[in-house]
Length: 156
Image (cartoon, rainbow, N blue to C red; front, side, top):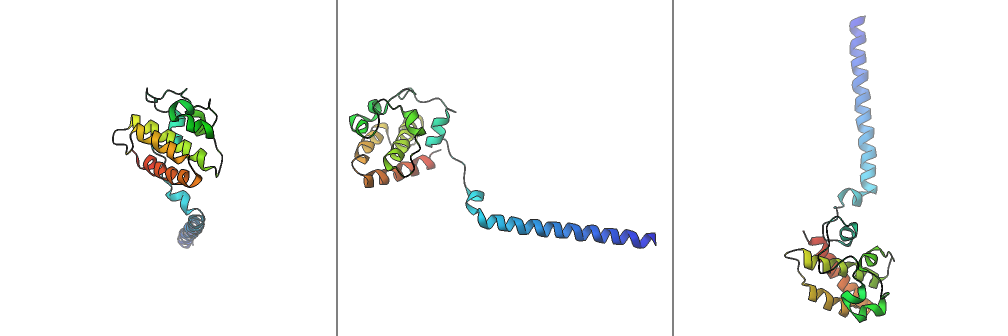
């Protein structure tokens, strides 16, 4: 009788383990279907606006933390933004759907990258010139935001 109890316990254990794995796989599959973007999202790089606002790396000397949008991008930028707004404050602005705020965030990161990263596709004067051109219209701002975003995300 003791010999028949051992195999039955073993069979119960194996069945329990099997059902636990199957139910776990089913819930994981459901989770994968619902949150596929979460599982495949990549981490933000060292060139994004989020990285520069985290202060994990020293800013280039050419652009100190207290640099204002007016001093860096000129009077055209001060028409759209506060003249006393710093670049650090500009990246903290979170106005969803506002293309000029997004342009300022990406352009600020692009400017810092142009000074700090060898091989960045834009020089500092190109970033400043393009920023002024992007402030002309919402369409221009959206296109330039996309260009800077691609360059910032691709940067190493």
